[in-house]
Image (tube, rainbow, N blue to C red; front, side, top):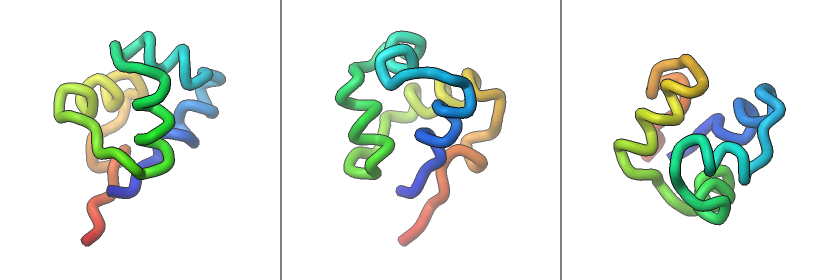
Length: 64
């Protein structure tokens, strides 16, 4: 699933480690999500959307 995590993280001047701490996952998981090698769990998606103050649809773009 494509996503905007990296650009949103950078726009907030957050490191991968800081974002990981804020939403309660590992830095390695953030890295994998940003590289689109891993789709996060639904609770993680909600936490990210809340943190960035956007909808899930704005954060993740479903593509087949």
